[in-house]
Image (cartoon, rainbow, N blue to C red; front, side, top):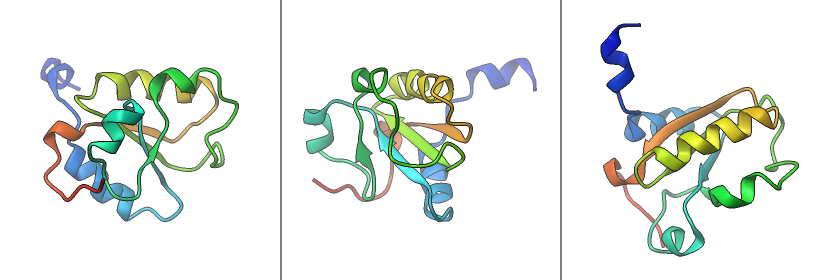
Length: 106
C-alpha cells in the first residue's frame, strides 16, 4: 500500500459488477428513503445509515458478501464500519452513486 492509496476512492461501477457476479450477495443503499426513491441501483435494498445501529440483522448471514453505497461514499464508509461491528465480515464500501454509470430504477 502506498501513500497514494489513501486518496483512492472506491469505484462504484466495479463494485456493482462484483456484486452482480457474486451469488447470494446483498447490495445496500444507505441513503435516506427519499434519496432512494429518487433513483437507486437495481437490486439494492434501502437501509438508511441511521437505522443500522439499532438493527440486529440485515437479512443475510454474517459471512454473506455485503456491498454498501450512498451518494458520495462517506455514509457507506460509516455503514461498512457499523456492519463489521455487527459481525458481518465480508462488507465492502463501493462508494457513491454519484459516480455510477449504469441504469437506475425509481
